[in-house]
Length: 283
Image (cartoon, rainbow, N blue to C red; front, side):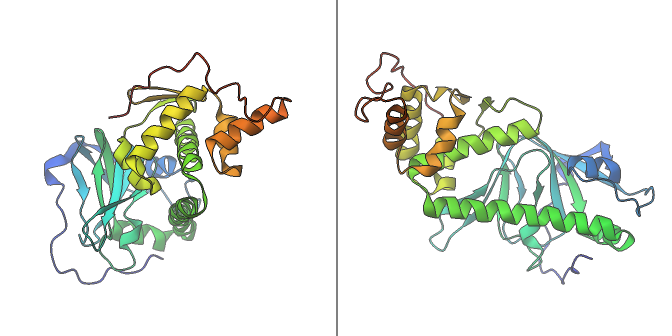
């Protein structure tokens, strides 16, 4: 069973202006979106979860809002962030369809971050009290919800590890691979997709300078590893990006690729080639 909600001090951020009067989801539909099986010990329930629609740039919840709802992304792209002691934004994640938002609010009974939309979004409100009731009715459902929460924690810890141990090139390469994997999970191409976030948001998320992200994307483009056209990314050589985890820089990875082919390390087939196309930078 999920922990009880403590007494709140101020009202939560309201979503009344955005609520859809027509669109509601059943427990089965919520389970499908979360990629969990409907528990066998949970009978057909009349519980319904209301949808909330947002335009790009709107706020889903604010830092310090008391815990009333968790939020399940039905469609769209978002950004979750927090503010450090110097009042600077720290990007934590980019939630997409099927992601559960607001798990960090359970510990202290209020949200530890804020989430805003990067595109038009449809969000399902999951009242915490309703989730508690379902967990009381079904041990299997409660276990599944805990697994989902654990998955979110694992993702965040992985990114913390990435920020500590990898080179800047490997961070950007892994980010592109990760985005491709997420799109593939949604049934889209893992090699051609749009980045809804800006270069500045990517840099913030990876813990590098915005100029570094621009330079690395340009280098990947020049090497023929990806193509960049506005916000569209096409991954041409995913193996190259994955292998960057083993190297300290793009130059080292490109050199190693040629050594394996019997070419001198200093004469990468990519370096100085004619396909140095201008990169259409991300906005």
